[in-house]
Image (tube, rainbow, N blue to C red):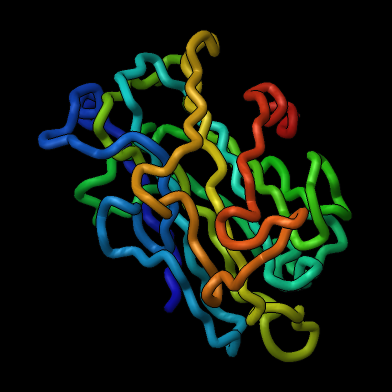
Length: 265
């Protein structure tokens, strides 16, 4: 199963006005969510994705979202932290992204373009957000503390201009990001080993930041049991620091808004 997000974004004055009002029937449980292919609340995504590892063509998306416990005015951005752990003792070459010298340097990316077919999830930024990957940290490129050789820590950021600050409601599931993984170098000459290795991917936190960063909220709990992680090839039973299982082996990592922003300077 593959998904190649390439949705055109639009923003209008009417859309912005609608964003300031709670959507009808908003009743999402507070927390964070992760799902393959679609936003969690849409009910059409999957938690596990199995891939035959037989093509270099195509990609798929992991979609992240959040819901607030109470309204939050003047939101300008989010800080996103994910962690993955492979069942193998060391991170497979197929899962080495973003850093110079890695096997699949350009095979991981992020965008903030909501699927236009969504009817439950709401784009918190209404098409105004920009951002990208800030870091892909491993024991080889320890930009942040990484616990073990089979672990990677992913940090991303998205934000809107100050004049586009958004007033967000409680009980609404807000779309935040698409984490995209492509199939480049899966088979044939120059391919990278490890596509078939089970991996657990956990959304550790989404930090929602307001203008002036005066009342930012870091959300670390799932909206529903298990809604904060997805698995690849079944996920397996990764072991990190003596802790085993998905998502137990990928604990929450705390950081600050400033530490992620600094990665873009």
